[in-house]
Length: 280
Image (cartoon, rainbow, N blue to C red):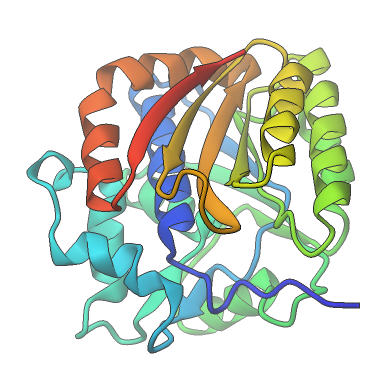
């Protein structure tokens, strides 16, 4: 059975869009003080390794590398660009593309905002071991207080965190695409029924079935909105991606789609695509 590996894909256009929107929503939470002074509780269903070494000729060159080569003025102050530049800078100690939870932790640390994290990762992919990275960084003197790694199915695990401030569902949709679409839909229905705030990353596929999958996902999430990047309409296997916000996070994402429209449009153009808003 084939196993998904993100190593050669880390930092691609889909990652850039995903992480930019994710940090924009975390920034919204911090600015709104939605956590009322308590630690922000962040949950991720498919955490991955957290840092991915740069590969010559890797997909990051068309994503993160392309963006850093010509940063739009509208994006220079965004926390994602600041963290990305530090991570990929040639003089960095270990240049590597940072994953979702790693970026969230770095940003909250920089804002001196307390947080806890529950990271789910089965470890089926040899690249994906957040626990190993955390141990290495603890030995190096970096503290990650309140972060736990659960070596189990994240689809089932997130159901136990409906009180979290942000739940991020981020399956690979490969190689078991049908299974992941079904599982993420079930998780969305469960979280929506509980009133939880959650985000879902999803791929946009050129195949006709792709649109039906996305429509079904929005229906499962209930009242939801999304920000999509389309870079190759009707061509290739992966022609774009989207970030769906639902439950308690839907209003924050809806507000950002309005106030941050300029940022998203500039990012989409820098990545060679177009931005589209979506709502259920």
